[in-house]
Image (cartoon, rainbow, N blue to C red; front, side, top):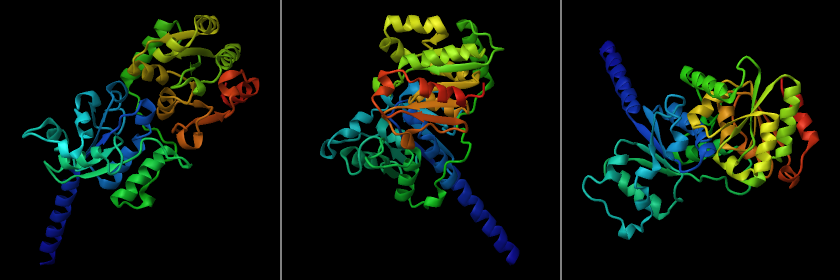
Length: 350
């Protein structure tokens, strides 16, 4: 009889484990690249603490398309094709037809975490109603931005908020040391070598990628600082390559672009998977508080992150080799800072 009890217990435990592994979660993340990357620790918590079979992400395709196979995100869906705007309707006017695409969208999930809407909002009420049309699902609404006065890192804030609402213990909330959430693939490195060749960069030389842009002008360190770094790196026989995206190309004046080309080579108009390839070939990265800086840090690249008005205690990039420098004054974006330039150069290994 004891043997039969042991077998029964084993079958029950196996059945319970399989039931967990068939459960999935979805995260609705409407933010930009940095917001999506700062959500990855929450994805890890969902998988480890809840032992889920998968976590999917709904967001802007240009930001989240790089995540499957490189991160703990299993699959993605574009927020632009999801009809989520319907959930903002007043509940009295919200209606779902048979075989409604919204019902189908959430039918496979036991957990739904949304950064859209507010707790108690029409969106949340309609989302709960939609999810429960197919199965019983837990819906948890989290704030995308940290409330005023929050001093903990935003990724930890997300995890703690989820833990408190889901019944997990706070000791399950942790970001691993030497955190590297983005796995580089061999195809990424091959793509990076192609970018270097097109930019005229010798791949045998030590390389520092410089990204002078960010989401707002006040978050951008004065361009003369980046130019000064590039000149000094050249004197140290280190290649400096400026990475310019659409925002920088639009923001920079023609004279500033001429200055950049006078001191270093440039790579511009790259798709995000090409940026990953380029960063995978870099010995170091220097950039403002931006999504690309979070990307470099998350890949494990030695990252120098420059902060002006935003608080690095809340928004610093997560990675195993990240150094943060901050000037919270108006001079950050308005004037060159030789002192800060020197401090950054002293922190580099070459």
